[in-house]
Length: 304
Image 1 (spheres, rainbow, N blue to C red):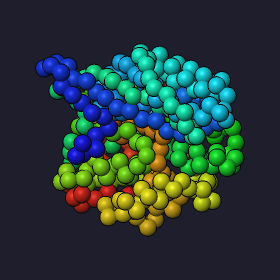
Image 2 (image 1 turned 45 degrees about the vertical axis):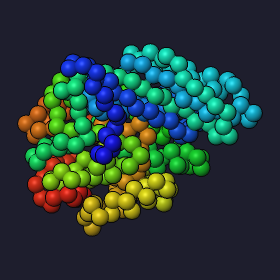
Image 3 (image 1 turned 180 degrees about the vertical axis):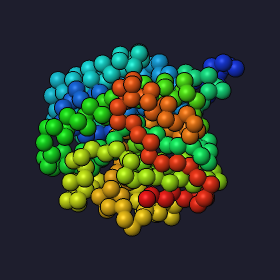
């Protein structure tokens, strides 16, 4: 709890621990089925970030049954269920309440060996950082609400957000890594700051190497930014230093709150290139090395 890990881990025996998490939110795309898929992938991601294997899930539903057709709820639940089946997860129940605002998500339970838990702390000087999905979903989702983007952009981010982090997680476990987190509401730089807070090391982020959705650049330049982006920047202003030659749109994207974002993996330099190659071969095609862990400046993130 003190270090804001992605999920809770409880040791049952010397060989088995359970991993528990939950997440739910309001729709970020118009298609109910796609929303269900995204919400499920997002909830499962925290278990993958810890190196665990999700096994069971329970639905969390808030639904305005007086104003929305029950067919919408059905499509959401089917989308979530299909994503759970893809992950090898069994739905064992859930709970629903009537609410003026639609919300959906999952509570998830998985397992892991107690000695193999991957924390979001543990980064070491000399590690390289691998990000497995592009950034910009928060900016584009904000634009969707105002009908400011086309179907191509919606399709692109929906595919990314509904993609499980399962493959990347399995590959990092097989390689052996020092730390991992998934990039969600705090944005890339917010989660990076969490990883080094109180650790005695710093990070350098190569902004030019960070993958992002092309539409996010144009929208950020137009000033289409979610409120959470500004809060992320304000909260971490004391830890993050962005070089003057980094474009403003790119700095915005680095603070953009993500939904069902990729994993950020801190891996020894000698293993990083091989792990990245294996990810690309396995279909995690947009994974990229975006920075490194350094001895100095201690406790700070430098974006160059």
